[in-house]
Amino acid sequence: MKAFVTGGTGFVGAHLVRALLERGDEVRCLVRDPAKAGALGWSSAVELVRGDLDDARALREGCAGAEVVYHVAGRVSAPSPAAFMAANRDGTARVLEAAAVEPPRRLLYVSSLAAAGPTLPGQPIDESRPPAPVTPYGRSKLSAELLVRATPVPWTIVRPPTVYGERDRELFKLFKLARAAVVPVFGDGSQELSVIYAADLADAVIAAATAQGSVGAVYYAAHPSVTTSRELVRAIGRAVAASVDWRGATRSCRPTRRPNSSRRRGPAAPTR
Image (cartoon, rainbow, N blue to C red):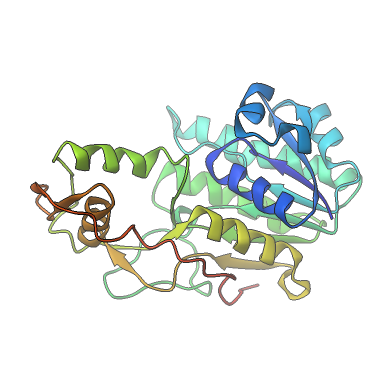
């Protein structure tokens, strides 16, 4: 299958590209810096289109002939709400415009759990709950979702939660802090979290994009079990050979096992 990926050199996008190549797909990527693709080791196997979400020509070139468009690129940090909207909402609008010229079989948009908004303890949300984002980032991702829903191109949306895995930068900060015996935890450590391993997310994204019954559906992609911030910190401590309690105190010990990275496939039940 011919796939076009935006954000292919980013954390999640790089895992997606690798998964697509492993299944034998022909992959084309939008890249700002071809050197980053070279550093990932797959540039020779991928067709590179140099540009970004502001480059309409590059987006049209990338979408041309693609059977599936995976829109992964976006900003997770920005100096202002307007900057979030410019990247995540307006960038998505340009991808949709380019895809509409020669419509693919499917457009898969990687959104975020932040687009849905927070949950209450013990009351996890599912796809049937109306979204209620509370952060500028979440609002920008929901705004992009609304554009995707309005496109005539067959679409699917996946909302991942916290993602961990190779080349991650955010949770990696906690690994570094664990080695230094200082790990911050929100409140008493009972905050409930949904997480997913990056390679599992890539599998879920591909499954959602290629399933015949997933057109016009929104999925959450997460491991079935919910963890807490305290449990997450302790798992990180085990991975770096330190026992970490929720107050951030550590003591040296032997590692027992790595954080859960079992490969669980498939998105949850859809909403339309």
